[in-house]
Amino acid sequence: MLQHVHILTLTHRHAKLKEIGNIVAAFEADGQLRERLTALRQSGKVDELFYLSTCNRVSLLFTTEFEVDQDFRDELLPGQPAVPAIYAMEYFRGMKAVYHLFEVGASIDSLVVGERQILGQFREAYERCRDWSLIGDDLRIVCDRIVLASKDVYSNTRIGEKSVSVVSLSMQQLRLRQPSPDARILMIGAGQTNLLVTKFLKKAGHQNLTVFNRTQKRAQSLAKGFTNGRGFALDELENYAEGFDVLIVCTAAAEPIVTNGLYHWLLAGEDSRDKVVIDLGVPADVAESTVAGHDFEYIGIEQLRALAEENMGFRREEIKRAHGVLHKHLGELETTYRQRLLERAMSHLPEEIKAIKHTAVNQIFAKELGKLDPEAQDLMLRMMTYMEKRCIGIPMKAAREAVLG
Image 1: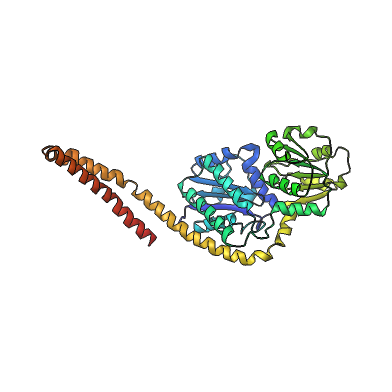
Image 2: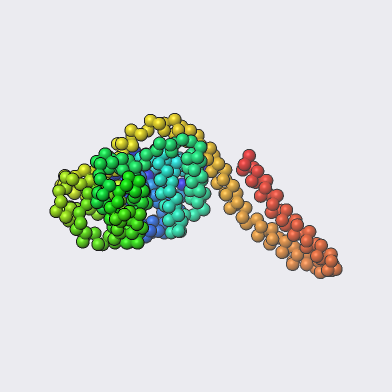
C-alpha cells in the first residue's frame, strides 16, 4: 500500500545539526525554496512533494514511480554544487515512510519528545506546499491523517506532560545566567520560535527588547508587549550601536547572520565576556568563527540536544501508548486510501450510465418513445432516471463495503 510514497530525511538522531543545516541552506538559499521545489516537481522526477524543515530535521516526502537511488538524489538540486549530506539522508518507502511522519507529527521523533510545536510546524509546511501547488490528492490524504493521528496522541496520552521545548530549554539556560529584568535583550528574527521566546521573556519580567526582522511590522509586533520594546527592519542592524546583554538569534537565513564583523559592531565597545548569545537557527545564525573568536556564554542547538536527552525518562511509557494510537491511525489511513482509489476508479460510472441512457432515449428507442403519449413518455423517462441513480449507487455501495470488509 502506498508504495509510490517515499521520504528522504535527515534528523538529529543520525546527523550533526550542521549537516541538516547544509541541506536546508541548499534548498532555501536566496529565498528560492519555492522555485527549487517547483522545478523539482516540474522535472517529472516527483509527482507530489512536501518539504519540512525544523530546528532538528529536514524531510522530503514525495510520490514517484522512479527508483530512489543515488542518481535520483543527484537530481534533487539540479544546477547546484553537490551537498554531501543529501547522500546521508535516511530513506523510507510506503507505509514506513508514512509512519515516520506519524512519529514526527506526534513528537515521538523530536529533539524534545512531547514538544507540540512540531505539529504546528508540520501544518504550516503543508499549507505552504499546498499553496505552491506541490500537494496532490495522495499526499493530502496522508498529511490529513498525520494531523489527526498527532492530535489523538496529544489528547489521549500524557506524552505532552512536563514536556520541555527547545525554546524553554534555552530559556532555562538563560535563567541560570541570571540576567536582570532590565537587561538589554537584542533579538534578530521574528518567526514562530522567537515569538515563543518573547512569551518566556515576558513571564520572566524582562522589560527591554529590541527586535530586528526582515519586515519591520513583524518586529514591532513582537516588541510591542515590552515596556521598552522596539522593532526595526533587518537592514538597519548594521547601524545599531547601543550594545546588548543578551543576543537571541533565530532566522531562516541560509548563511550565518552574526559574523565576526557584525558581532564586534553590536558589542559597541563593551566586554564580550559579559554577554550571553542564544542561537536557535538551523543552519546556525552565529558563525563558527564568531563563537571561536570571542569569549561569551554561547547557547546553541547542539548544547540543547544534550539537555533534551535528560528529559526522556518520564515519557518512555507514554511513547509506547503513542505508538498504539499511531498504528490505529495507520490502519485507518489504509482504509481511507483504498476508498479513495475506489472512488477514482469508479468516477467514470455516472457519466457512462448517463451516456447509455442518452443513447437509449435518443437513438435505439427513439421511434418507440415518439409513439407514446406525453404522460407515458414522462413516466418512462422518470423510470429510467430512477434506474440510472440505482445503477450508480448499488455498485459503489457494494465496492465500498468490500473495501471496509
